[in-house]
Image 1 (tube, rainbow, N blue to C red):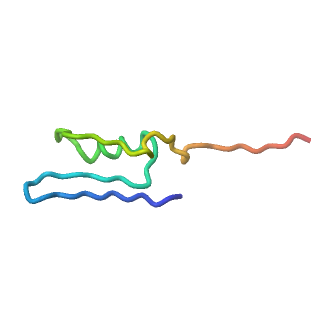
Image 2: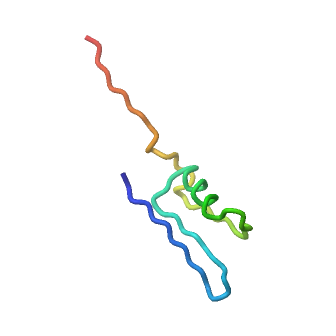
Image 3: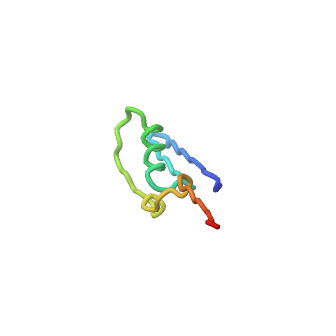
Amino acid sequence: MREKTITVEIDERGNSSVDLNGFHGKGCGDVADALRGKDTLVADRKKREYHVPAAENRVVHNSTKR
């Protein structure tokens, strides 16, 4: 499993930004929503990984019939 990193930056004025690395698909948005809570969203920039479906939930069944 790939490592996931959340980077939160807060400037001198109290403005914050969040950068999520290692997340794919809707999981990234879910984490960002949870971190934001009831705060107001000013800008939302989605990375390329956001548009890639998460592979972690895929199940592969290999079977051979004899």
